[in-house]
Image 1 (cartoon, rainbow, N blue to C red):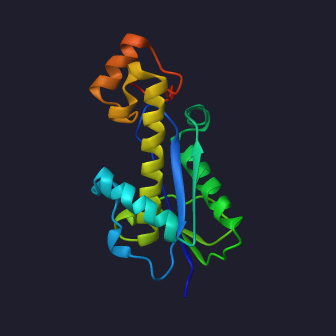
Image 2: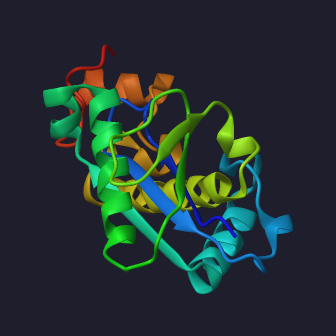
Length: 184
């Protein structure tokens, strides 16, 4: 059986906060029916799937690139770095990986065969699982950032450039986790 590691990210589009990447290796007896593109699942279903992925996967990891790192190298490069970090954690478990499949059209440089899969978060189970872990981790972090920086409303919009977020930036200035390389 080919051992696949799926990788996906959450947080490329926001104007605040880090980008998060997750990597997942699933066993052949995983309950695949619980998986879907994270954006198509309710928060409750994502959180239930997250628990099952963490409990039943052969390996999983989450990694980050900060808002300041995004500003330094651009969002694409920061995303690829976060993906490399997530995969490096999987590598350290000692599990042999035959193939890494990454959602999107760009793949990070890894110590394993790796290919990008456009719309992989809707077609590849391992990428779906990674999508769920990345989104739940990032959403949870942005709720924590809301508690720390309540005037920006991060619990509601998770750092995306909503009307309310842009208004808060005009009113209070940029938050400490703002991405300055993004126009808003």
